[in-house]
Length: 171
Image 1 (cartoon, rainbow, N blue to C red):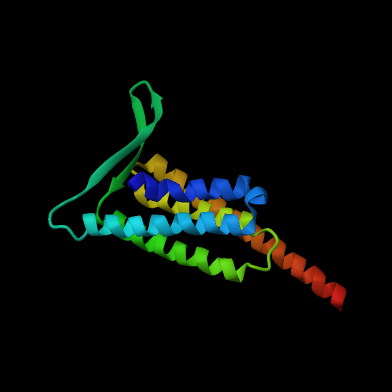
Image 2 (cartoon, one colour; image 1 turned 180 degrees about the vertical axis):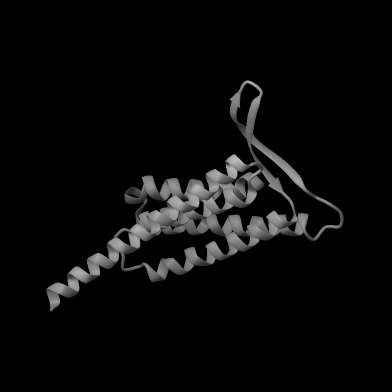
């Protein structure tokens, strides 16, 4: 379940980014919003299983062996505890609402598939940051948030410049 919560936004981002022209605007919106809805619902389920149950339910979920060099071994793993599930609920619920709101707000944009892909990538990076088991993975999540922010800001600036050019032609 935890791997689905974290990796579903990444899968949606890849599908919307690489196949956005084939699946169309509605397809990209449906895939990214649907993935975030499922991820948010699963986050709430995890919250009730971990945070609301009596006792300590901290879980360590190993995804794969990431960096192995001699005695140096870093695994790609999730540390799931009460704080993590609270943050999963916050990040996924807010991101789900932002995705749904963006469907209407960005409806005029011709490149909405790319925008939805960037938005899902941002969510994945946030989830990597909050579920990280070690500092290398946390750094990966932090840099992913920076990259996704850069892409989203660049997308907004490009649209702003386009609007300013249209205004200049009108004047």
